[in-house]
Every structure is written in C-alpha cells, then in structure tokens.
Image (cartoon, rainbow, N blue to C red; front, top):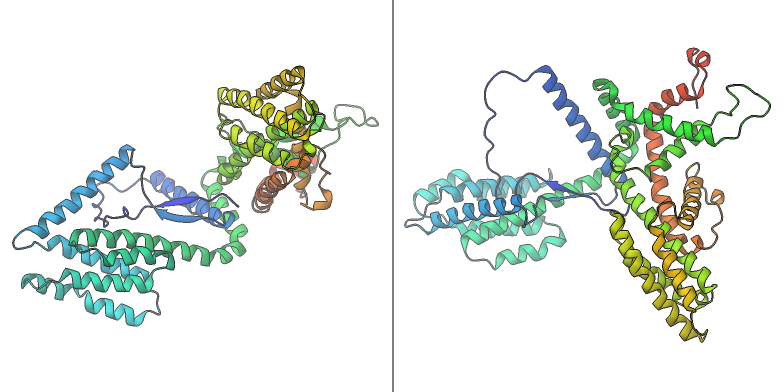
Length: 485
C-alpha cells in the first residue's frame, strides 16, 4: 500500500524521561463484565495492529508528539519546561543537587539496555561497569560525579547502536556542553532510537506475520465473536442489502413462473457488489460492516480517489467533446490539463460548496488552456457559444446525478468490478476514451482495492459463508447442512 500510517509511540514524550505511574486505587476487584470488556478491547487492539502491519508495507511507529498549537501540546510543553527547569535549578545550586540527575542516569541505562541485543555481551558488561548506580551514588556523596564523562560514554554507545539515519543527531550531542541540554538531547535521541528498534523488529517479523496472517486474524475475530455474538450484525445487513440489489438486477426466468421466478445470484456476485458499496459508503452511516472496519480508512481514501478520478475523466470527456478532440492531439496538452484538474479539485470532495467553487475555477482554467492550445496550433478562435457551454457543463458536475458523471462512474465501477473475481489482466474490460487517459491512475486504484478485497475474503470467507447460505439456499436445503460456495 502506498499510504503510510504512523502510530504514536506512547512510552514517553520525546525529550522527557518516563515517570513512575501511580498504583491503581485500592478497592474491590474489577467486575467480570469489566474484565471481559478489557480482554475484548485488548483482542481488538492486537487484531488491528497485526492487520495494519500485514497490509501496510509502510507501517511504522513514531514517538508521540501532540500538535504544538493544541491544548495537549501546550500542557506538554509546560510540563517539559518545568521538569528541565527544575533539573537546571538543582544542578546550579551550591553544592549541586544530583538526586534528579542520578534518577535520569538510571533511566538512560535502562533505555540503552533495551537497545542491546542478546549478542551484545561485552557492551552490556561495559554499560553495567560505567553506569554502576551504587558507584555513582558514592561519587555524588563525595562530590566527585563527572556528568560530562558519563554523558560522553552514553553518546559513544548510542553512536555504536543507532541506525545510520541517527548519526547527525548523535554527532550534535557531542557539541552540547550545558548538562541539562545534554541530558535532554540524550533522551530525545534515545526516544528516536527506541522507535527505530521497534520498527526494525516489526519489519523483521512482517514476513512471518504474512505467513500466519489469515489464520491469526480469523482466530482473533472468532474470539471477538465468542465474546460478542452481535459482532457480525452490520456485516449481515451489508450482505443482505447487496444480495437484494444483485437479485433485482438479474433478469426474470421466463420458463419458471411463480413467486421465485428470478434467478438466484451467486455468492461471488453478492460479495463483489457488497465490496463495491464500500466505495460509496455514506460517511454518516455508522453501521459499517464489522469485518471491514480495519480497512475503513484505506477504503475511505480509495473512495475519495474514485470520486476525483470520475470527475477528472468527466472533465476530459466534456473538454474533448467541445473541442472536437483538436487540442488533445497537441503534445503535452492532456498531461498539463490533468495536472490542472487534479490540483484544483484536491480537497474539494468533503463539502458540496467546496466542490462547486472548485469546479467554477476549473472551468475557467480549462477554457484558458484550451484557448492557448488552439492559438499555438493555429486552430482559430474557440467559439463563445462553445466556451459558455463547456463552462456550464463542468460547473454542473457537482450534481451526483449529472449524466456525464453518472456515465463515467458506471464505466469506472465496471472496470473495478471486473478486477475483483480473479484479478487477471485478460478479464479487464478494454478502456475507451476518456478512461484511457487515466488508465494508470485507474489501474493503481483497482490494484489497491483488489488487494484489500482479496485479503478480506480470504480471512472472513468462513464468517460470510453461513450468512450467504441463508440468503441463497431454500430453507429445506439449509436444514440438510450442505455447504454453500
């Protein structure tokens, strides 16, 4: 997948050591329902994390950093400054108070130890030798603690353990002389190194997770279903709606009159139609199928790409029609026009008013480019009547039921639908104008959508089967317990 997801790394702020958490209040033990709820939440969390690692090749974890202009960001900044100002005050007193600094050195030792691998025997021994907390306490008592010497050792060890991308940050630490800034910088870079180690571990485990992903996700979801039997209600409603639409679209069977005169759709056709619904899901409809929730953000992003692709192809078709294709033969014209369409329509999908305004601006931009192209090609003037018509046609594309937008949408949907059953290039319909002009974008969209659908069907097929069986088989056949495929 091309989209990158970054998970917050909640251990500690970037430049602040983690503080001891207060013990939970004493009292009565948690109830069974609360315990079950926490267990269920943990199961859902593990399932979501494993799924994200498997399907998102760019998945990574970064240290949590709230926006600076947010309330959380301002409070965090105040806490950070208060912590480091307190340390500055302690170290500047006469004689210096090293109590807080010793605690920080202990945490630095712990963080460095977490970065060491089992084979780093000599490094671990050296770490224990230099950052011997008992010896450091004795040095404090005798006024002989050398923070810069210890910091230099820490920086050297960080340099030997960090990824190459962290080399500049580690080199910067060597130039810091003021003790508080030095310790603060060490914690910041150690936080980055810790996230690097986690991401390295994730990427190392990813091939193994890929091999076990289907069985793991299926087993985890079954655990959720065992605890919450209603966890497939929205999924069932989603499939029922798709089955009704698919059945209504089938021609009636002429040779079998009666109440059951329509042919039954196949399970594959129902599933494919259901998946296509997700690309047009109403954002206000909260009854999203449970089996697709982990991919909702990806599907929402693909839905936005689909809307923009339909609008882009619609504008290309309208422009070519009014220009009678003359300017489209000019080298570079189509590419420049596509860039203009993409730039002006970007971010206009969320609100109707934004789309109307973007299409008005786009109409003027398209007219300008067409006139420039005609002038360059020596094709004469662009008739005012054609200009007004094209401007109005582009402006009208904001309407969902616009005939051009509907036609292009149906063609794009047909292409995506054809990619779902087997994904074979031979089965894809031939792309005609104007979809041929956006073939690479359409293929990228279809591939991403197909990958999500294929993985989901592989994982959740056993959960869909009983629902589809009830929809497709007469009650008598269902009672026999025959499997439906």
